[in-house]
Image (cartoon, rainbow, N blue to C red):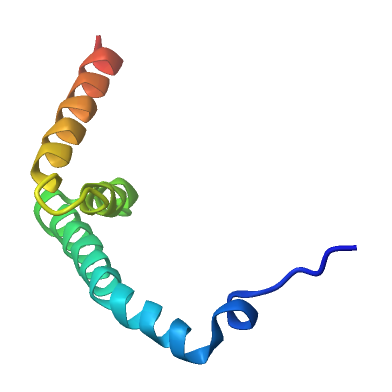
Length: 88
């Protein structure tokens, strides 16, 4: 019978604090960018619940440093192609 362990059991409090400290800037950056994308979509474009804007912002941020711009362009082209095909 295997025993399931949580992250608290295997890493200890020091290691867990270190992982949180390392990840915190990325978490804050993602939350801010998702909020800004949501706000822009509501304010400038009048969308009621712009879920896709926040999702797109988070997808663009998942690329490594230096790859985010390319990932944003790829996402934009993909969305544009999807909209064009859907409208056709």
